[in-house]
Image (tube, rainbow, N blue to C red; front, side, top):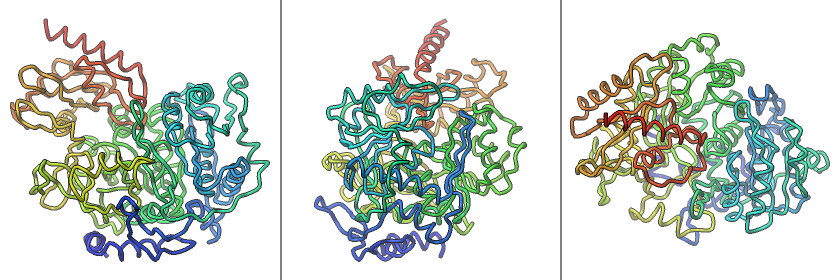
Length: 632
């Protein structure tokens, strides 16, 4: 069956299509009710089915005779540690940790917060929770106490599982002082604090009363069997905000999610059971959940846990070293990581040191990938770099290419076509579908397919107003997009990334594409800033490639000329500021809203997700210097 037939059947015969896909995983009780509605009239998949996610990820493969296959590879250049776990070894630790949680009083339906770095014990904690029906919320390791507090107050966990420290390049980041402060600030007491002692330093002074030692708990506990849960039982919560106001806890089901992940590993990523698959994402993000833990393990792939940075541990060849050493066949990362590598190694010299002959496909997502980066990848790596698009809310790709049979065509700068199950339309402001090559709002006809969010934790009204109220019968993505005559969709960015220059609606992502094509530019961001005359005007910030000798004045002149030639004078791009680095989240997304706020000299809160707060002062100083030069 080809990709087009799969898609058509998923839209025209939803229940039959997803019933067939559900046959691809092992159920304790196969569902007879494929598609139904809950009390709020929202879609439920496989509601009377029963299963267990940990069983699908671990026990099933052991029962099928693959217990000695490597399940997890841990590679930590920041601590100089490497370790592997077979499915048998993983089950031993997961089932005993699950038993330990049971001994502490946790049961199906309880919640647990997991606040840990990129170590195997984080994955084990997630699966131990899934094993006994405890709903987990993974919080990005190193988040400030406030971020922990808002999640604790919202989901009211019965346990918090943490580690003594994380490592950022060469710096140890103590977690326990942050946990202690969060516990003191939270509204409700967390009954059990379980800590994995990494023993990276003498840390006895960081310990506080009431801690349960992770290793002792595992050693002393009986193993726990997999608990049968309903398909609609929440597997996890993942918060998409929380710096101000009430957090938004995206709630994921179990059966629909497992079905969608198995489908995506086969048809989208085209990876075979037994192969090594690496998603270079933190566990705290949606990618880390779906494609570092659950997706690959359901599909019996070896998954890689990497603790480090793509360019600093020890150099910009780290990704290629891991791919070569562990025979990774398919990888998934953010375009930012590839841009960072390109900046440090523009001629691909470090790539040549490694054997990448078994490396089949590179997937990119998180933000749009510029053509210049795709070209660099094609020249130096020589395998397909496939951009695709999805959201925390969807849990798996909404746009992409079906690569399972090798018969697919990449259109550069496009996020691909509609993935089966996602009936995507491009609407204007009034809810009318637009013709090809017209920019509008990306919406998805309900019902959403399996794996998409169940809702927002304990807040259906917010779920309704955030996603379902803009266009009746459609999910509102919050992104702008253009569809071409072949069905390829080009994401133009968040709706608020479209700027209005003297009444002309212009896409900053289109300008970024032109700016990034300059031969000396490593990466860039274009934002709309306030202007008394035109309402808004675009402002570009660029990072130059290592070794570039072009002057800041010349690069500005070139870029202004290029944008004028390709978009026209209406674009009104006259400001191009060169910086040494862009502000980003820890997952690599450029903080465009922060850049815009700094340029507009408005009050701001430091985003909780920022990678390095010092960059704010750097950019503020650069803005002062840039504007002083402009006045002279």
